[in-house]
Length: 269
Image 1: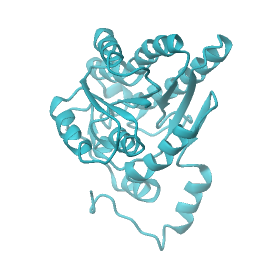
Image 2 (image 1 turned 90 degrees about the vertical axis):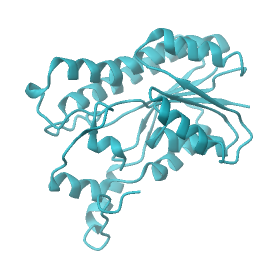
Image 3 (image 1 turned 120 degrees about the vertical axis):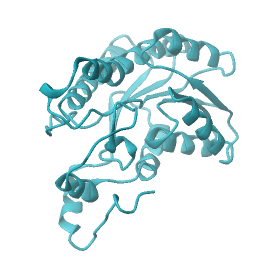
């Protein structure tokens, strides 16, 4: 039975993917920094039908010893770690770069960029030893060089994630590791992430123009997860990119928005 680890999987997109992996009979690993969220997510997963086991780890992905413990302990319970998805991340306050303090800059880069690099490095070594595995990193705003005021730092981290993932895929191929590397591009997801910064509940006030765009292009994480999980399970190629909000899908949404009105902000799940 295969095993999947998703960082930041106690809620949102990470949890939605993990629930689908459980339904497909994977061993699933909850990994998050918030203990209460982990317990709640575990209780929900336990009632989801699936033959695999559920594991839970409270982990700060910026701490090497904590990520290493997860990997080593998990391997005492399962034979291999087959899929690792670096999903954990935080949003920035809705401010231009010159209004962000050093602590905010440090924290976002530590989690969104360095955390992904660290986890990839550690699990890469494990997957090389077992001669198999898949690593996926989640892209976001900035990965395609788009710019929006108030998302400059977040976008910088995600643009770096794109390069890092492609470089990791190249190195994996050159060194003939049998580890597949890929990018997940979910687009705009309607979760608490878009309205809170730094993962601690600090409120982000979205203007009406931004809400309008999110209503046209956004989707709930469950919808996007369904697409992504099926792609990941079937994948046998290195350096892949699985994108939900393609140019054609975005264009169709804008063309049909006049008669296909959606309001996520007054009809939240």
